Length: 112
Image 1 (spheres, rainbow, N blue to C red):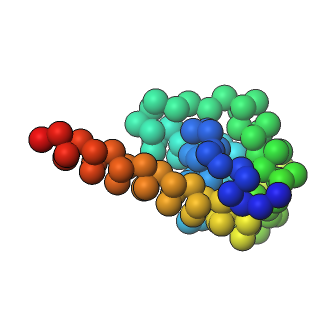
Image 2: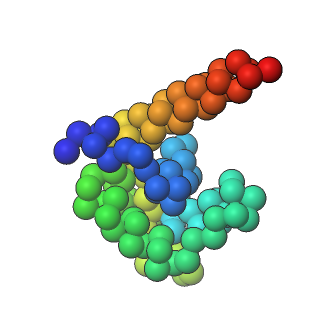
């Protein structure tokens, strides 16, 4: 499949990709980041997150990394980061949303 075949993204998928757009994160870090970015509107349950991450791994959107600085508490945890394909999907979705926002603003300005 090509990147545009995955659009539009669900809100959950969009926020997960946005969370991983700048730095790799552990699952718990993604959950907290999504909650912060959405000002508490989107709260991911662990099962929801890990189901989405598994699908994104299988589809090649993200990659799993070994934590280079494990401590006793995070020894088993994995870091996730966007793959090149995931970046491509995220960029296409961002452009799609920007286009919709531009159209909305243009249409609403016509009515004034």
